[in-house]
Length: 236
Image (cartoon, rainbow, N blue to C red; front, side, top):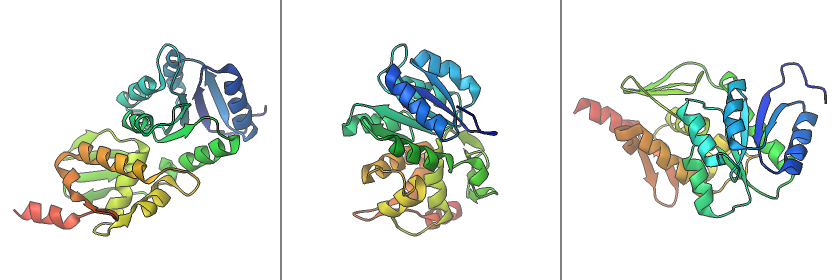
């Protein structure tokens, strides 16, 4: 198929050859450049191509999807990662997010569902982010490259984690429901559940160390980033 000029690149890793061909066909039909591989080792090698989005099957030979994702994140790669799997338990979903994934699709699914998820994540790119540093106390967010520093030390964040933290700090001291966070961080075209928000908030809190306490939970409602606590801490 004809690749569109300036086409975005998508890396797909899945050991089911027929399934891989179907995904490749549908994505190429939409104008994407596709790198298709059938094991985890090949997926890690393909990271050198700097894909704009990565789609990983979990159960693969050589290296499974979780391992590929963790390896990518350890290299500082913040590219959105979507997991594909026949597993559908909450434990497997949470494990995918904890490995550094941004989304999770359970097989079987329609090509239109995958395309909607892909487009939703690709829209959350540095080019579409608000420019200018966001600084609250010792916490600094750079929307142009998704970098987060705390007291001058850089912290590794996935794009979804960055977008979640960015939304909270741009709209501080307001309790945001999980529905609002899902809509603004994941987008209306991405189907995720409330538990997804809780998992990501927990990961962000852990990475922010002492600043994680400033993300407060309003029981039964949602979350807020309380800048007043930071101000009081600075004055103490």
